[in-house]
Length: 133
Image 1 (tube, one colour):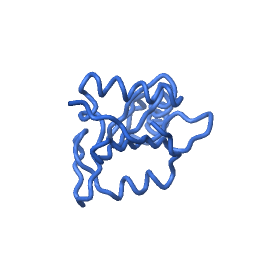
Image 2: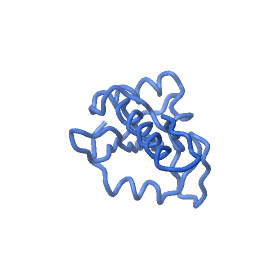
Image 3: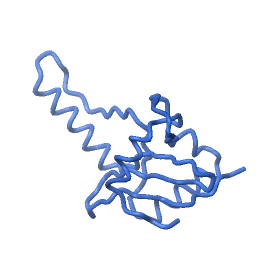
């Protein structure tokens, strides 16, 4: 059974933003989170890695981006784009493998789609804009 989002929170951002955090509360009460990024964000991360390599002795300068938490690459961070992406992931039954489930437990794994602490949600919620879903 596909869960339906009750509320979606999108991190407050300026018009030039290349990344944002999104929290989703499902009708079941479960809360999920993930980061949405654009291609310019990935390019900037790759350029930063390259510049860091150039400044360090015995480190070859290489363009790369290492993403540790779930990131979804989208064309832009418009509300419609984010909501449509979430709808697609739910319909394709891939949502839970790409979002991190936030719980009251004080444990965290680094595996995408697994549990994170409620502190993660509190930090993200402190800087988000409520968007009715």
